[in-house]
Amino acid sequence: MRNVVILGGGYGGIQVLNGLLARTLPDDVQLIVVDKNPYHSLKTEFFTIAAGTAAERDVRMDFPNSDRVQYVFATVEKIDTETRELMFSDRTENVSYDYLIIGLGCEDNYHGVEGAPEYVESVQSFSKARHTGMSVGNLKAYGKVTVVGAGLSGIEVASEIRESRSDLNIRLLDRGASVLRAFDPRIQAHVADWFLKNDVDVLHHANVEYVEKDGVCNNGVCYVNDVTIWTAGVQPHHLVRALSYDKDKQEKIKLNEFYQVPADPSVYVVGDCASSEFSPSGQLAGAQGEAISDVLHAVLHGKAPRVPKPPKLKGTLGSLGSSDGFGNMFQQPFTGWLPRVAKSGVLWLHKRH
Ligand SMILES: Cc1cc2nc3c(=O)[nH]c(=O)nc-3n(C[C@H](O)[C@H](O)[C@H](O)COP(=O)(O)OP(=O)(O)OC[C@H]3O[C@@H](n4cnc5c(N)ncnc54)[C@H](O)[C@@H]3O)c2cc1C
Image 1 (cartoon, helix red, strand yellow):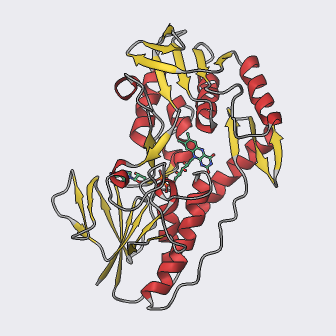
Image 2 (tube, protein in one colour):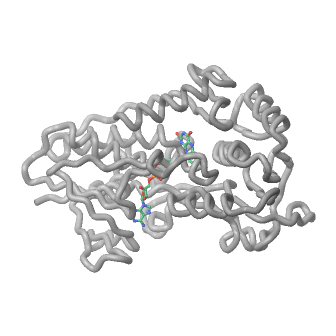
Image 3 (cartoon, rainbow, N blue to C red):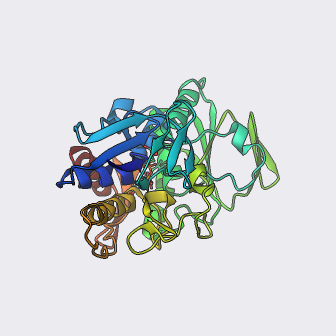
């Protein structure tokens, strides 16, 4: 048998799997999905887990049930590209691969800020978002929460916590002169106005020097604080950073036009671990996953694959609680309930698909 191993069943991995399951595969092909969680996680919604506004069941889904797929639910601790095996921290039997698709996502980048690895909460994995939700939920009345980073995930986390708990003192530390640096000024103004009206304190030109158990020090001023949530940068998964393949400046793996590692074309990379001209997103990971399933389908049948077309991305949507939002649709900036409804619609479609 030829083992096709999908490592990580997140936004990218699930599209590779669905794409392959939708087609006829040669009889000697065994699909194996490896994930530390026994479900597909909707990472784009982890801010709701951190804020306590959604049930876990709303942001995860069962993997497809098919006799073509074998599932290994265990935590990988090493990818051995010499022996072509995955090794685990909680399983003794290795998994060997003939073809490997790496879709492990990303993790926090603390940029060397002292105290951050020990004391901050995170939304970068299900278990971390769950831990954040517990910390926020257990806060006494008028507790203090600081969100470091005012990009898309920081905005969603801070606004969702405000919607969840009106009593909390919430502070958002923004490195730039205005929130959401990469977005249209109309969107920036709408989001700034939402935070003003909803009593979230936004501090611009932030430069966090260190984090302590009960405080955050920014630009020489230390604030007493109960929970600090880090949304100020990500990097590829540590297993990917440990691989010796050629990488870009952000330590993402450089790929050829078929999403293959040039030095080892039986290894594919999807999503946040793949070097790309586009910003990382669930949408991009999904588009890459679809393309990889096309390429692999041809390769597994012994045919030359077609070069995938560049991904067509439809814009970014963000939420400000459950009834307000923002985003770019049809290359136009939108604010208010319409982009919020559209975001819910995208999630609904992803779940149905
Ligand atoms: C709060 C937040 C909001 C976001 N909002 C949006 C949005 O609105 N739109 C958008 O497009 N993108 C959004 N994103 C980004 C998006 O979630 C990611 O870009 C996307 O999930 C990347 O997909 P991926 O397949 O690379 O990795 P992921 O979807 O993260 O999947 C990685 C998989 O690997 C598994 N895994 C990790 N480590 C191991 C291990 N050691 N062993 C076994 N399995 C492992 C995980 O369990 C997971 O299933 C948001 C992200 C966050 C944090």
